[in-house]
Length: 172
Image 1: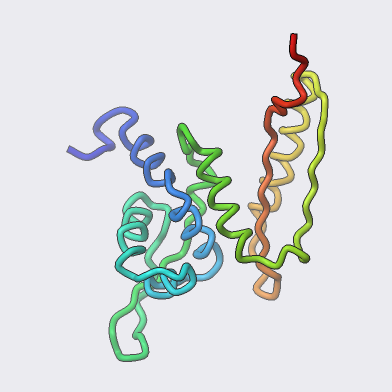
Image 2: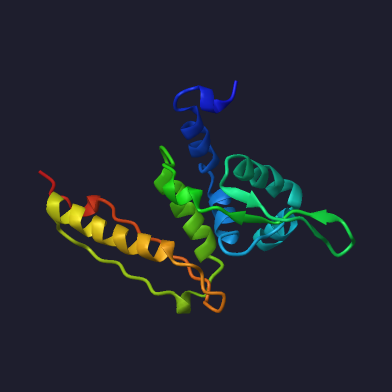
């Protein structure tokens, strides 16, 4: 029996596939460039055997799509993978925030902090204002996510988090 035969099983399997900061990083690497498992492992500083399980799972769930085979340097058959962007439309399930934050921290640790644009802002919003704020950001993110990548463009990543500021809550 396939997971499509059990209501909710496919969504659960997709959420499990996205429940790893490493898999989220693999999807980012393959966003606009098809990479083989060996290339992915090299960029992550890991052994190909370590990343193979993750790449295979992402491909099985439709988050990565195998591209036409190519020959490697030594004549071996290589299969490059490209992200399908399915993850943008797939609910991640419990713990999603922590997974995305860890992926962000892992990637940010490799970047040049002097080139980062960072904003930290404390707000006080009504629920209505909060929903408008999120809608406007969501619309902007969706607009840019739908754009075709510019081959001459600089690869950039964006991380956005709106969270409760528990330290600023009134204590009674």
